[in-house]
Image 1 (cartoon, rainbow, N blue to C red):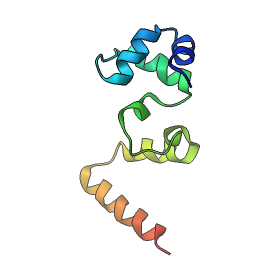
Image 2 (cartoon, helix red, strand yellow):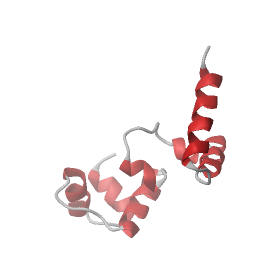
Image 3 (cartoon, one colour):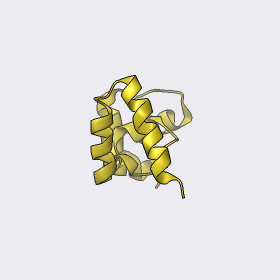
Image 4 (tube, rainbow, N blue to C red):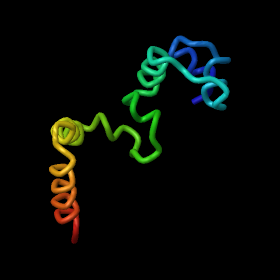
Amino acid sequence: MTQSCLAGLADISVDMVGKIESGSSGARFPVIERLAEALAIDPAELFTVCLVEGAIRRGALHEISAHLAELSEEDLKRALRVLVALAEP
């Protein structure tokens, strides 16, 4: 997708897209939301390289994330051990 196309979809200037992409300017959350909507992704995906594109919006993963967000650190560690064990061949 070109900067021009993204700018049009997000209703921001091409110059702003270029500045955000190059890191010479940041964006306020309303702009981040418009960019994410234009890209059909969750805004959080713009802040990490560790997610597969579209991962946050997947049904089951979204539900799991919501449940995990409510757990204590100790419970999260236990949940991680269970997930790792389940994923082993």
